Image (cartoon, rainbow, N blue to C red; front, side, top):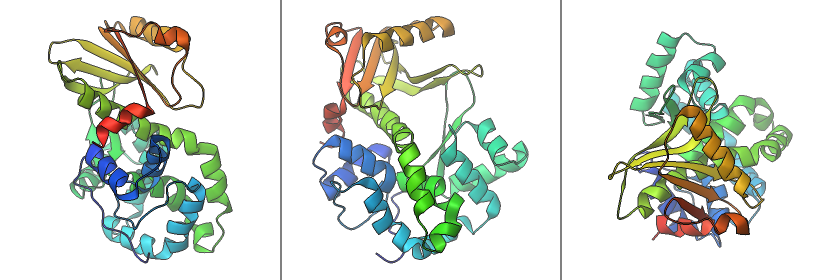
Length: 289
């Protein structure tokens, strides 16, 4: 495909994921989440999501680098400041102070640039409990571009994809994990029917404490959760760690939620109930129905 596909920046993450699933018909939700984290939010032709991720990256993105770069430049005016901030968002945890530090810009300059990028529909800003706000891309594809393509464009421009491949192999799991966490939050909004989620964010402290899910239901119940995107089943010890984090942060949790790529140990599953809810990738079906 020549040129940059149509962005669906105004759609919510759930809407983008549902469209991606409907258009490309992945065989399972592991393929769906992984490929969505790379290509999501963009109107591609039919993608065979059963193919290895890097093969699709090379075929659909790297081989069309010059055309896509030109169209992305139209979104950013080719401004080095904007590209620096966007790469900092893509390569960091997205917290405002970390983005400004990584892109080496003064806070006042960075804030103005972020506001422009938000107005253009490239970034969105989310409140997080306990610390700085966080910046997120409006589409998964733009995050991929500014994490794996834009910072090392010279080799790609010259037809050398080695660095991209090596970088993807090192960081693919970590990169996909953010999309998994965001979709997990959407899943809770979808599945908490009787007592709906009214607030949802992450919890961060300036001391480095981090909790993936921090929500409040209509009945004022505090929901605290962990998302685990790994190839190992989640054990009871992970729940114990989450409970310890809550104690440290002085958070009284009414409901604990664990979302796991590969499921849970028998011991953990035996504890499932009103105070502990367990979800796997199979539950993501609720996002596409």
